[in-house]
Length: 82
Image 1 (cartoon, one colour):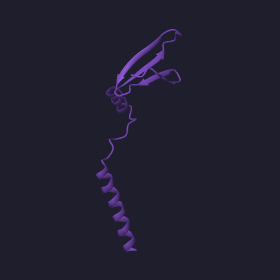
Image 2 (tube, helix red, strand yellow; image 1 turned 120 degrees about the horizontal axis):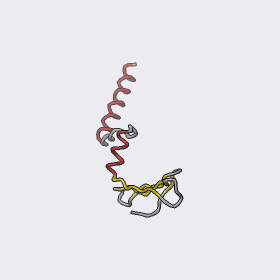
Image 3 (tube, one colour; image 1 turned 180 degrees about the vertical axis):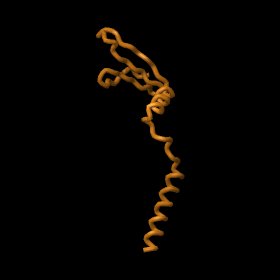
Image 4 (cartoon, one colour; image 1 turned 135 degrees about the horizontal axis):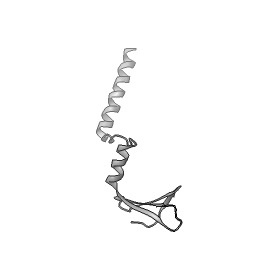
């Protein structure tokens, strides 16, 4: 894991190079001591889902293309009906 932390107000985080873990550091009120915790990506994912801040799993490319084509066909059909 890279040892360079990014600070967000009172919290610092560092994401592992492989993206599998995040380290968090936060002051516990003392300038000399920090509380530290490491979270696996599954922890982060579960927390995000519980907090409703994740999007549903993305569609596959074939599903996106199918939806786009159906919308295009609907538009063409409406155009020809007019």
